[in-house]
Image: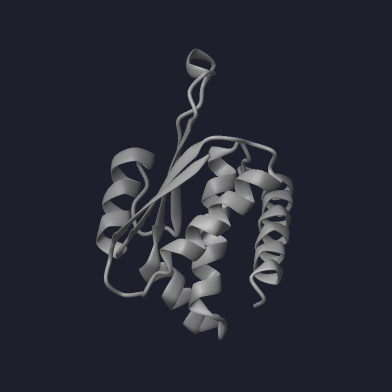
Length: 145
């Protein structure tokens, strides 16, 4: 199990060690195993990726690229999560919450997507959001926050 983290933005300071621990906690709590990549980008890059890969205009908080499929069951690379720090920071300020916690929530949400969770309908979205909150809460408690 491993985590690669790339920082391609300048808006937020990142604690890569803590983010890696969060990713490992998520993978462990989901009873999964494998490597993931997490990339932190700014608004212009997430817009570009959203339009290119999801055919959707505008910004988004996180995009997940799962790489597990039936043809590659033996591979241990689960996929890549791209998180927009600009959206996390803006949303946190608008809601009066900690930007790092919002960023971590997006990270967990993206990881859940590459681990097979979906949020395509309201019931699935509620279930996925509840799971993401439970993982984040457990992580923050373990980290003494």
